Length: 120
Image (tube, rainbow, N blue to C red; front, side, top):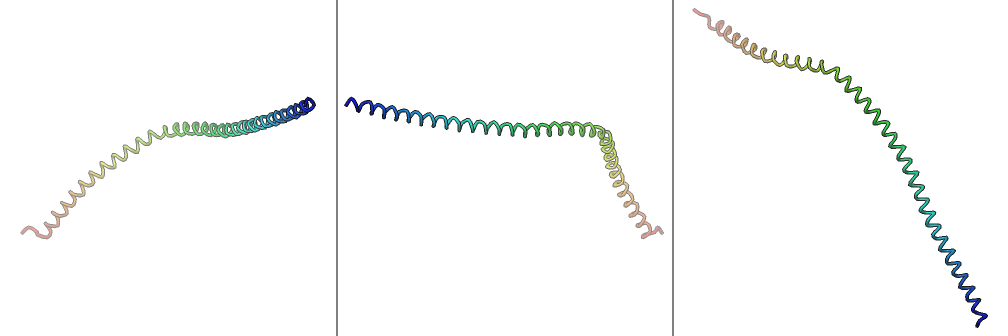
């Protein structure tokens, strides 16, 4: 039986060696998979960062454009005020014209009545 013990021990040692080798390979594969995922994530982050950098450049350009438009529109404020004043004057003229129109209508009515019924 002593002869079989070393064989059994060799088989056990070989089985344990295979187990540890397989376990080591599995852990190594898991770590490699995780490493691959992390590398992919890093590449995706870099790509998104480039994309957002482009958006930042566009936003910065738009901000400058809006500032320029504000400066230009500030020059139009004086003209807008003049247009508002003209609009107010036109409204006042329309009111005066309306009053004059009613007055002229009354005069026309009086003149027509005088011609239709001349004094004796």
